[in-house]
Image (tube, rainbow over all chains, first blue to last red):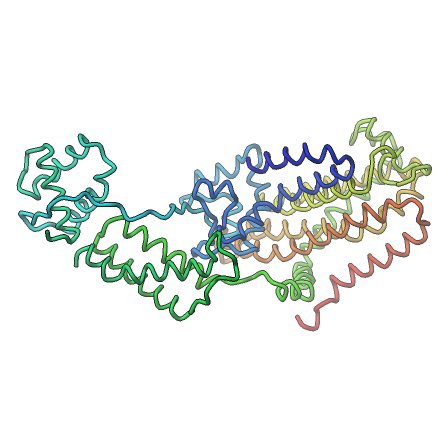
Length: 196
Length: 327
């Protein structure tokens, strides 16, 4: 998409330049068609601007940065992926394969991965830490910790619903409401490591 | 140990690793020269520690934000520590001196098949069209045919294109886009068990054959041959080599031997990509010659034939001899 826009923009500017501009336009068309993805995948981001906008990047199967050879292979084989029309083979290949790769990625042994943006440490809700009334299995502890981390992003009603499910940890089994929620989050603080 | 305590104990190390990685990458908005030198040993040490911490944090089901952070810094450090730098002047030099011609020779069988698939249709169709010039109309329409007539007619200032079609630069851009595109298609077609490659080779061979046969039949060979002689040394060879690269991956898919088909494809592509580097370079050379030398109408044909002979000898000699001793 970005490439189309760039090409169109160039088409307008080169119209002004006439013959030599048309020559440059054709070279640029070639470069955008074949070299643009290779050039961008070899930068430190390992992705074209479009991929970057969606948090995607290209890496080798073993998690290393994509090598020039692999980038050339996967981008030249794009032609084969495009056939018979509108990336038909690529879509087919991605649907039938467990690792969801297109043909070019298979041959180049590359992966397109989602790399989430850096997340900041979430602010925890300030509540009094409470000792749990019974021993908690590791997965229960994990669930409580996750609830505490998510709490600021949930609506009050939803938070109450979720906390009611875990109410047994603070000895409030069967109850719900803001007070229960506060106590459950208190236990979560305890699990995370706060003691006051 | 509780998650908060864990973070309190080791968070500083993670922060340090993040800073070091930022320094290595060069933080956006900071000039390149202001990077501080980074101790590799320290990065490696912190990387190993972060990996341990990640394993512990996962096993103890610590909160996701902590796992996310550890996963991100270990992945970043992994990339920095284990990346191999393939690109560089030294690498390009070995590629020219040994890699590319060596790859051509080690793929000699594919090159032969590719050359035959390209040349045989060229000659057959050229002969057919020469015998019966009307046949050109089954390849191109009459307007295109007459524009070929006009392009190569002796009065033309610059042969190989219409007089009103404007400058060398347009044609340079056109050749780059068109010819390298054709070569890359010949390669990519190999992914369909080589059939795509064979089709593109034969199709392009037949097409050029038809035009050549038509122009010879029209008595224009004395402008046509000086035009194509020089750049074809690079252009035709390059297309044949791109076809050979395509056939290599096609063959790897059909007969993977003891590897799985996808492994075999990976190995074959890694081999074939060396050929493609050379092909691209050759086609760029071809485009320059085609746009600025071949089309120069004021040069006597004799000069063009001599250059052509030199170029063909150089290309074939380079591909068959260069780097043989070192290999």
